[in-house]
Length: 437
Ligand code: GAP
Image (tube, rainbow, N blue to C red; front, side, top):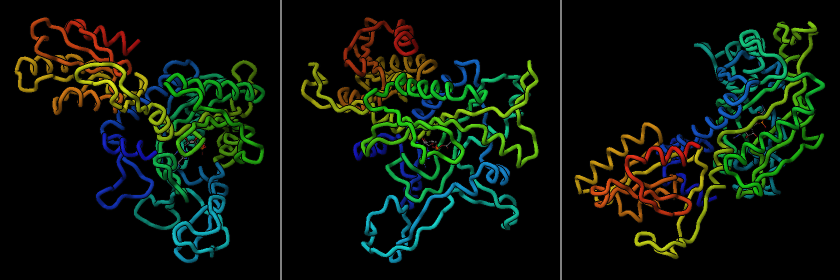
């Protein structure tokens, strides 16, 4: 994990939030490469879940919602963790994660266990009184439930169908940690899939398999993923069943995503609290009922961390080349072509040769219309290759003196390190075949 955190910082994937002020615990900023990776991850999810299906539509709801939403959802009454305080240093812990002694000061004296609501409170408007107290949403799901009728009326979808959303959520976690794994501000990718009650168990199983497949399709190794059905006593108050997709992180197997059968709890609750009927009316039989909901709910930050960890390789260079001697160790981020933040790096072999620089810049300008491309001339070529390997760049294109005569460039493949001479005019077609098919 230390190597991952250090690479993330050194190469501009993830920085500590407010670092110049000493940092804010458990909050992280995505740097220039991190933001590309995160966007690619969210786009890949959106493409699979929304664009490539006929039965799911997207939504983007606000973080701030009417406070009654949280009464109806059960968050005000049930979204608690148990906590105890160290009587000496006042640090707060979850009792299930605490040894006999305080890990900060060694004291053995703790307060009795109390319930601590994980929602962040804030105020809307100029008056900081209780009337204007609202919450930062702790999950994106509720924005979907309260828009159920709006989406139904405007899209004329019929069961079974789903609504998908990606967005920020906030939880005042007592013990955040493990880098971006558990934080107080994070992004979720959630699907609420509405079905007839009798179909819910079969759709639950289907979604569990589809979600596992998604992680595999984007490159996570099978041996590092597993499914864990929840025991009856672990289930949330609204759920009839839940299965987690877990990843084998350096700190142990941990949840990436949960796929729950939420029953008809949510639509019933919001009907009761809002007074608006959120039942589904079958257009053929005119039968009215509350659909069941299957909810695949994953974290963007957690998924990103898992893809990053899985892609991280240290390997011995096997090929012999002048600039990449055999036996060296290279760090290479073997991210899939969908996820890797940069697809192509243009590297001029001599940065003071006008002909080379002009041709290299021209190639960059042509290719950047189709692929995320960078230009780097700030080191010797061997070092430039290492830098690009470390951040997962798929292809390095080297422009050399020979290129000025034969109008060909060297294209190096990240994973095989094989080099090929490709005509400049055929570059776009070559890369399109490799990267977009
Ligand atoms: N709507 C259901 C729901 O929110 P959850 O299991 O509490 O269920 C779903 O959260 C996913 O959100 C988790 O599997 C995880 O990937 C992500 N997540 C939850 N809390 C998080 C936190 N504190 N930091 C980062 N990701 C978190």
